[in-house]
Structures are given as C-alpha cells and as structure tokens.
Image 1 (cartoon, rainbow, N blue to C red):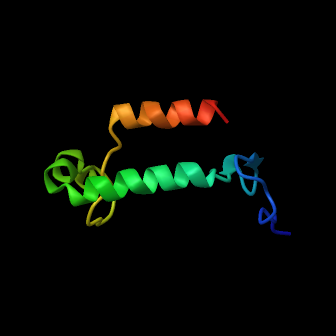
Image 2 (image 1 turned 90 degrees about the vertical axis):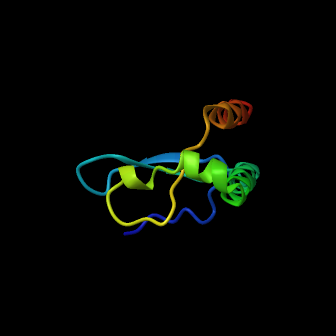
Length: 84
C-alpha cells in the first residue's frame, strides 16, 4: 500500500524502506523552495556564472544544464534549515 504524504507538514522527514536501501522523504518548506528557485533563476540568467558552475559533463546522461550551488549559498541554506 503506497504511503500518503499529501497531509505532511512542511519540514516533515520520514525514512522509507520500500526495498533494500533506505530512502528519505522530506517535504521542503516553501520558503526554502522559493529561495532555491530564486538562486537558480539568478544563476541561469548570468551566463558567465552558469558556465563556471556547469557540472553537466560530470553526470551520467545528457543534460543541457546542471550547475553546482556555490558554497556560500549552501551555507545560507544550512542556516535556514537549522532555524526551522
């Protein structure tokens, strides 16, 4: 029987064991989703920055663009998460 997470509150984290390896379900807070989308949109618009952060050649499969998140932004995301 599938697990229903539709009523889970933001920030909810739960381990799942649907098969051998454990996976995690997490419902990200919308503030964090907006912050990450804003960062991604800003990075994509800056072609030089997007090119310097492009990581798509290091991944399996054909991706048009997949960029790394700068360490200072990761620090900001971490600070946001510990404040929850």
